[in-house]
Image (tube, rainbow, N blue to C red; front, side, top):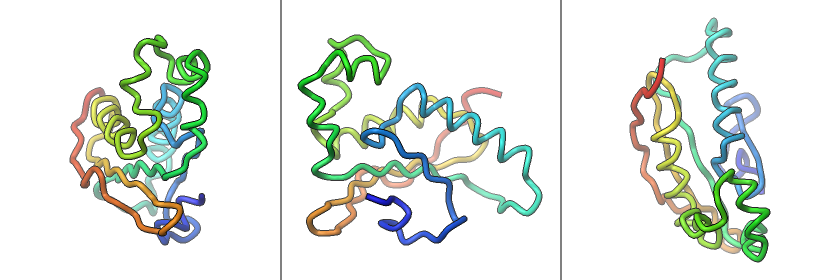
Amino acid sequence: MDPAHVLGLEQGETAVIRNVGGRITPATLSTLAMLRKVGAANRAGQPTGDWNLVILHHTDCGMTDLAAFPELLATYFDIAAEKLPGKAVSDPHGSVRVDADIALREVSRDSFLVSGLVYDVHTGRVDTVVVPTRGHRTAP
């Protein structure tokens, strides 16, 4: 699934971070922090205003097949295996809510929105699970 295509975006309109399951992990948060620094270093010609983090998961995701491998998933999320149920690995709507909550809590940005969507691979429908929600600056 190509997130830019699903959302009707053209080359250069967005930065797309892809990983297994489209999940917010410690590595994803690190990538977002680095992109923030890149953006700060290259402000000239950049649009001002809110930064919109769109979390897009999809139905029939291969991530659900990994539920049988809790140790692997625990390592991926950098959590103890007993905390995996809280990640909603087998439920794309639930996982979008989990990841949006993490982003709203952990992303350090002056002005940003977090949205959560689920793409149905059979119908092409995109469901809004988390409406654009304003985040708050958590760190300098």
